[in-house]
Image (tube, rainbow, N blue to C red; front, side, top):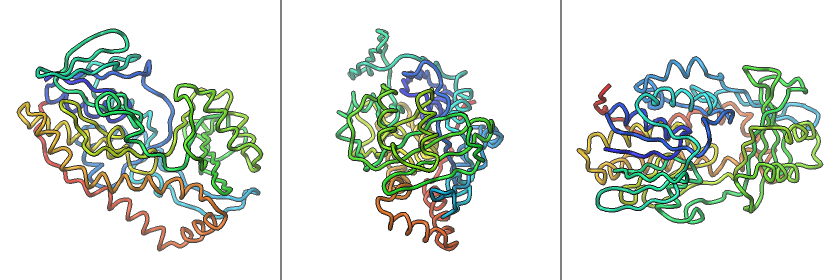
Length: 390
């Protein structure tokens, strides 16, 4: 079976790794000219996530690259601590940089899959014998199935299911991250400063203390902007945080020269059915949440399930898609729901909300309950032992 996977971030290389082991003819197409560098850290929690990473043969490599999790210290304008959250609150059992995860998955799949960088899907035409695909480069090929693993702003979903506005719901916040010189002498703990509806954060790079990573979150109605125009996005961030104290002026001063800027709305994706004919959605393209919804670890587990169901379906992709969705729909809905609370948690809209969050999470019992809940949710997916051809 000839398979096209759109997207080479996490879900795409993960499913390509498994499908390649099953003997499929896999091509991964990625709009970016190369694997993306930078990006924030992502985490894995619980035995199910660890088991899938172990079966892939990447667990030890990722453990060697783990960040260890970054404690979070919420402070006031003068740097006085208001709330401390331990590293495992955001880092789970295993935390790695998204770029490191992507690189490891790519290296484990590239011998079994063909990667085409700097190209994208322009048109999908399904017929009885497969899916005719025209790429932006002008290349035309036919595939048996197409997997959309190209994120919240999925091209595959738009072409096969309909416009983004029908599936992506804005949750009232935006998030931006960038790197900059660590001229402030910040340590590796993430320092976080709030005013109502806004959060600014900075922490040193664990590998290079001379560099630091900035993150901001701000409350806003949906904004019109060009997703490929980084200068426009930088201007939006500057306008949203102009006039704030603490370290905000220094963070904004590093933004104009930052080359690796991430900017997006905090949103979630809801698709009634994850497949349409021979096309199926995987990860954020079908059930994503920008941040806080365990999207990365869920996508890695879902890639294992989708590939396994395809491999055991005897070529019946419809049955494979049905079983894939039946196994994951309910667990994914629970993990995804966490993303709906992220913006409100990081940047409460009122001073009372900020104080209430700090007060409640300063109580060890409530903090431990939240940590336990994250692990419990991640254990909801049951794994089959799909037979793998090495």
